[in-house]
Length: 219
Image 1 (tube, helix red, strand yellow):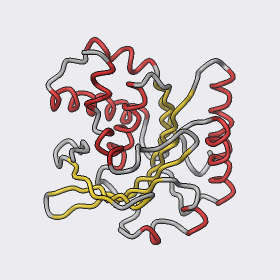
Image 2 (cartoon, one colour):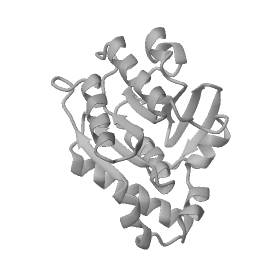
Image 3 (cartoon, helix red, strand yellow):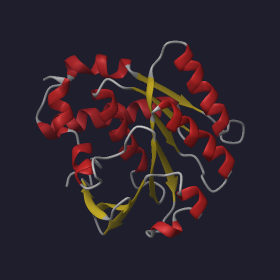
Image 4 (cartoon, rainbow, N blue to C red):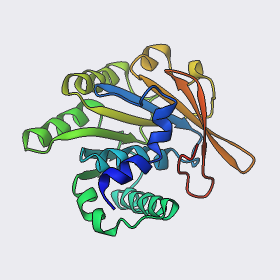
């Protein structure tokens, strides 16, 4: 199995099909849901898609230990291989080589410090192209801090995915309007009985299904 084949089989191709091609370089995306519904899994799917494209991913977790995040990547890769009936063991080492996982405490580490760390990695020769920022309480995050990441992502041509715990399903209730302006794409995860869905709120409206067992984006 070649990486090119896995890229075409990635669940993110389904997401891209309803969001005008997905997140572009220089843009930030946001995935919201209530606690424990699958935000990390979806962000990991975006991260894996970038890794398959040989783009270095920095996954920053503010609410999980690095070992837990690594387990998420292993699990999603395994489920992807199982669901698509492919063997990827020979590609796993190459995939994870382009990945950096760190965890921080929001009380002592803010977004401007994240930007400094990413720039230090780039200065050291690591061509970071995708940021995954998971578990950050955006309600407690100042607009100036968010603008710092937004400006850096735009200037450096990166893509950045954030998660945020929020049960509201409407776009206007996700964040304050000034913070929402920073995000080119916003989606919300919700459940209906045993079924799990991804409601695209921005830039267009759409509805995707997630596998209730694996949380892979399915259709």
